[in-house]
Length: 337
Image 1 (tube, rainbow, N blue to C red):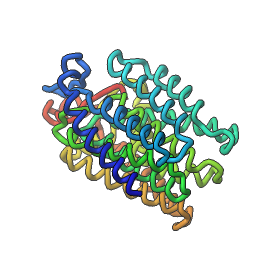
Image 2 (image 1 turned 90 degrees about the horizontal axis):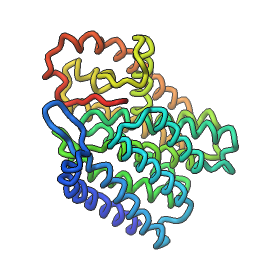
Image 3 (image 1 turned 135 degrees about the horizontal axis):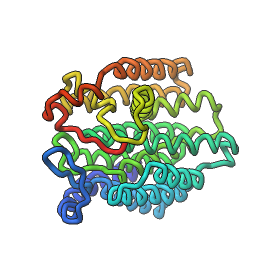
Image 4 (image 1 turned 45 degrees about the vertical axis):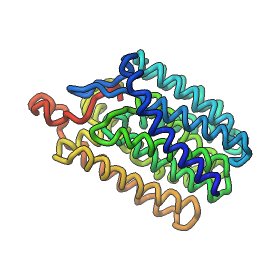
């Protein structure tokens, strides 16, 4: 236990230092996201991936984290590299989805899940990965969702004494926390596709490993509860773009954070509100996995997410964009999400 605490503390400190140290190189290499009148270097994603991989690798080599996460680390590294290429050259959505699907297909434990549930897990992992990428449009939001999801996955793994997965998720959560020291509004470093996609992917596959062998229906509820924020945001975006006759892959200011901003909330307020919502869903998911609450509690998470999606879908973001002054959405940025 002390080894795990030391590893998490090390990951937090190293990520905070590395994200700061990589800011200047990222600016010089033009690895940046444009946020209105300023450019935010995407040094956070590289820092999170590098530190998580290094610290977890040392844990695994030292025998403190157990075994069974080597394939997950390799697949997560591939997705991180794919995201880094996207940060530089802006890949098409189908390329990102296809590459993520290949990585997920290589990391799913088919022996425990079965073939059909394993294939469904691949599809779900791709969706969560792209959903996390879509969250990376507001200061602190993707990092907060990642911290909550990683801690939830770590708690579920600890319940089942899956030390390797629990250690990996704890280190990832700590690394994302160190990154948030630079990403809180106003952000001085960004996560980018490299960090957001790899975080979403590793969390999704870790949860698949944890729930392998459980019932499909209840597992779906637990997985949704632990990734409720990213999932609800993706559903909202796809639904409203479909109903509005807009291409699903074209970026627009129509995510949860954009809509809450239209309602007058501040950027830090939005991140805190959505973070608390994500934490509530994750808590229910962990308790359901540990069989401390019945599966009926998962329906409350799904119902709450549906209520939020339907309510915020009525916020007229597309029409309002033409008439609202540029300052209204200044802290947020639009990307291909």
